[in-house]
Amino acid sequence: MARVLSATYDELVEKAQRVFWLNGYKGISAKELSEELGVSSSTIYTKYPKEMLFMDSLDYYTSTYSDPFLKGLRESTEGIKSLQEFFYALIEALLDRTFPKSCLMVNTIVEMRVENQDIIQKYHSYISKLSDSYKVVLRKAHKLGQIKDENRIDAYAEFLLGMIFSLSIFYKIQDKSELKKYVDEQLKLID
Image (cartoon, rainbow, N blue to C red; front, side, top):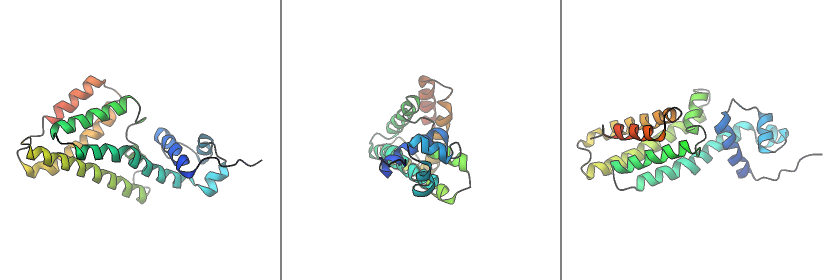
């Protein structure tokens, strides 16, 4: 007897996002994905292909996790202190497993490299939003007198991108106090 699809597509994308976050794209077969989602294999092969679910799960990740995080950062008003709070919140999300395996977008680009132009485009869009959000806060920090040279804002934004990638690795081997100390030491380099 055929299974009746009881979940909406959006619900499947939400579940798939978690599966891909934990396993990567290549780390799970279409059959395993169908089992994890509780749908028939034919659903994955004909109606909702694995790649379609994966691409939409990247969008779900961005809209659910990344965009709200970055919106809060852009709306902050305390300059460098806002950056510190942003990174501290990221540390909490990494340690409490809100982010089960680091950043899904970073994991994806590492796994897929140059295999899929759509993924590369999504990654560049993600990085651009992240960098632009940093620049908004850095400009506020400049207006607050926390940054002397406004011409260094782009370089500082690149530096902060490096910090987020470092934290995506360090959280696996350092405790919360060491991670916060790392953030504090790095932010002191912005002046």
